[in-house]
Image (cartoon, rainbow, N blue to C red; front, side, top):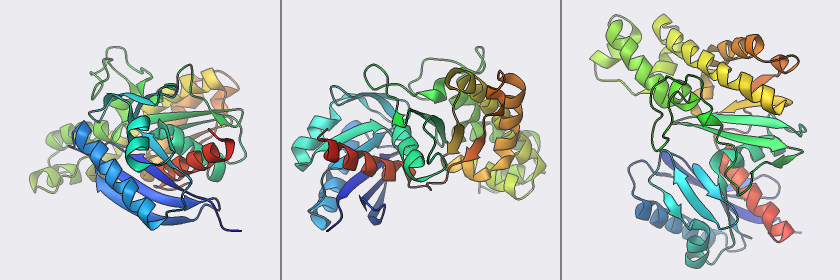
Length: 319
């Protein structure tokens, strides 16, 4: 019996990852394209082109799943509002169904990553779990009773917008709030705080990178931290403490079996997560203060893998 295949799309704030996966979790095709700086129409056109290319290579796919970094109205198939991309009230499901001829499933990109972690990764076998993906921003996904929790219309799980400092800086992108964990602990936040630290400490690795023109945002900070630069480590640790404040609230609310941290920034590991664990331990109620905080295991393609898995599940259920 041949395997069933689906297209998975992870549309991030900086890049678009498109793949084809079968029901044995074998990734058969991968394509990466830039998404930062594109208009809404350009994003839609790029998605259409990528879906067509994948469908041409694998004409037997049963559908396509899209993980999108925005609030989602599942009932109407509308991408309501993205923080880090210019997407507003876009009826993306119907538009792409019409243009691609494929069944289209959509969800928040962190929800698709959470599904991947639940099915294949660090939350496998755990029916109640939280995922935060830390990259350009911070996304969130909630697994309750073995299923992605989506809320009344499908927009639940915006965990990056848990407020950790009501008088903090304005949140980034289209978020109207202040002091969200996204603006305190994301890759963009680490970049901003790292640049300020570089200016204050010109002899540090961060200061030298800023002076010689090799500065590459948050990646410069996390790379320097992993290489042992103390100034960079302090920046990362501060972000970790802000993250831990948010995790303590999430642990109290959901009592998850595990909190999984994914996204590109998670590669810095315990330099970020140990301060977060310490804040969680000191702030959350017992027994939630012992909630494990672990690094994601489904890999950098988790959003795409989860999106393809969503399409396969929807095809199986007739959704």
